[in-house]
Image (tube, rainbow, N blue to C red; front, side, top):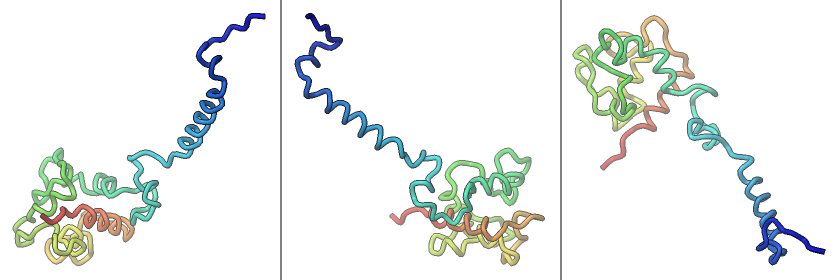
Length: 156
């Protein structure tokens, strides 16, 4: 009787076939429970973010601020473009308009006490509360606070 093998090398090494199968099963088992992609970082951090599920700081800024503070708005409100790249780090090097005494938008010594966050409160200290006419919820403000604090540039 003649036996034809598709892979003659495997026929000479029958002990390797179970190892290859075991490796394939192990690989499948370890990749089947993948936590998610990098576009969903909360799945990797345990979801300890101050942002509500499905909410991001950039999403809040896009929905609530871009009408006045984006590169595509006719006149960028107070000269603060929140759409250009480099946020939140760029806020630490940007100063506010003359109505707010040209102070830094984000305070590197105390990010949680930054003008950017104060402007979201009912008592912003200068100018009016943002966004105008539709204040953010406490949850949205907490999300933006965490985002700003976490985006603080490293000290040299």
